[in-house]
Length: 107
Image (cartoon, rainbow, N blue to C red; front, top):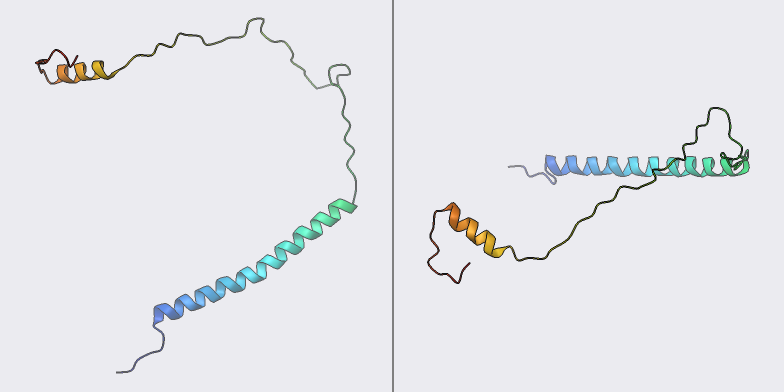
């Protein structure tokens, strides 16, 4: 009987891991290089002028400004009452199984 040093599954796993490491070390420097290139090219390149204008005092054509708000804002109101729900749950349980309350102290 001939014994092999590595089984087929271990050999396949080794080559798969070796391939993934090679892909990682190939793609990572490329990605970092492209990122740094785009960072420096955008930094030293053209500048973008940002003009902040008040669109209400000097509206532009095609820009619609809606500023009307309702006079009365809707609100949710209510009263919170704290009660213990256990007696009601026990009463509903006993009622659902048609049980009689033999001890008056339960409910």
